[in-house]
Each structure stands twice: as C-alpha cells, then as structure tokens.
Image (cartoon, rainbow, N blue to C red):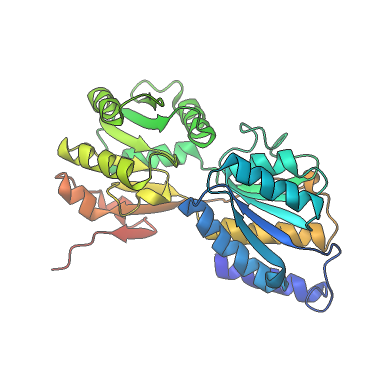
Length: 325
C-alpha cells in the first residue's frame, strides 16, 4: 500500500511540474514532535519518504520538544516568527500545540487518534482555519471483534490508562460507545492517577476482567511500566491486548493498530495539496486509513498456556513468536 501511494504521489508531482518548479510557499518545513512515541516516529519515516518524492527533503527540519512545554513553546514561537512554510505535527499533543501557536502558518497533523474529541479539528469534514491532517482512528468495533476472536471466552475487558491522557481518553470513549447495548461484553475502565501505585491498579484490573487492554498511553508503554504490566499479566495468565505498536513483541497476545508509516506518507500528500495546489488547509477532509493491521504473538500465547485461533493467525499482518520445529 505504501509503495502504491508513493507511486501515485510521484506521478502527480511530475504531472503538475512539481519536480521542475518550487512550491508556492518558500521556507523551512518543520516536523514537530512532542515526544519520541514509536507511532509518531514511524509516521515521521513515511513523511520523510514523501518529502523526498516532492523534492522537499532539504527543506525539512525536525524538532523534538522531549515532553517539555517550555521547549515546545520556544520551538513553535520561533517557527511562527520566521515564518516557516508549513508545520507538520506528529501525534495529538504536537498537533494541539501547533494549532495553538501557529496561527498564520499551515499546520498538517498526522497520527492523531481523534482530532475532533481532542479539540484540534472542528469536524471530520475539515479541521478549519489553517489546519489539515489525518488520523490513526481505528474502527473500535473491528478492533474489539479481533480482541474477542483472540480470546473467545472474554466477557469483561479491563483497560489500564493514565489520567488526563487525551489519546487513551478518546480510545476509551469510542470503545465504550462501540459496546453500548451489548449484554455479553463490557469494558472496565481502570485509571492510574499521579499518586496511584501501578501494581495496585493492575491488581484491581485483573480482579475485574478476563483480559487487559493497553491503549496508546505514552506513560504506560515506557520500559519499566510496560515490563510490570506484561510480567504481572503473565504471572496471572491474563492475556494482554493492545492498540499500540509498542506492545507488539513485548508480551501482548494481539495488537490491532494502523500503518503509521503510510499515515506519514499521506501527510506528505497534504503538504503537496497545500503548498503546490493552493488548497485551503481547513477545508480538506481529515484522512483515515480504511483498514487496520493485526499483530499476533504466538510466543506470548504459549507463555500463558493459550492458543490463538488459526483463522485469526492467518488473517494477521504480522505473526510473532513462531516456534520452529
């Protein structure tokens, strides 16, 4: 799919003469990251490929705020003053900050879970103003269906997340809406506050559910919290399911996610539409991928004495932990 989109982008560039002429707006293209999320970094890889195709790679500058609000404000204020030609924002917090600081510069966001719920966009038909972008939105019904296929007996799914995280907040809101009215399935929300002990919260989750869902939550998929989550679940033979790429190969039985590299590549397509074609950013519909990617970890299943249904295994995009015989 990525190769096909690259080919389409390259063909459109030559057809429009982009390879021979500069974009309408001169200046640096800023790629802004709030933190080093694996999802956002994958999207950045795809965006770089798109910039190469567009002939704009030399104008691309990458800035990392390292989760520092002061550093983020300094980066974006300086970029707005220059001004840069365009700001590409990777992830929800990056997009929120870019929208707040970059009033007169086009902003293209990518890998934002729900830009409407997060206050970044006025609606899915267009973000409004100087902002355009795409989303790593997943069809939560399809995601939960895959989780239930992996664990057929599951009736209660606990989701563990940190308080005040806009990304996991959006995921849980959508998932609860997807299961509303179901009599045989429920989602149990376990929120970890700043003063809470993660181990105690995991015990609470395990006591209430048949499986544990790790959503896109940067604080929880850092090395130590992720290790504690996976080891605690394994000790109780509780399967872990996830919607974050970080959990693939880390102990999750199944991960349902999107192709972040393709999202970044498609964001580069929006750069072309804005800088070359003269499109108004706020009028462009927010892009979403039509399908998800499924990772199945057979090794993680073996460690807790489970088997993954073969129909699901052969539908997976990636199969991890295959035992050679």
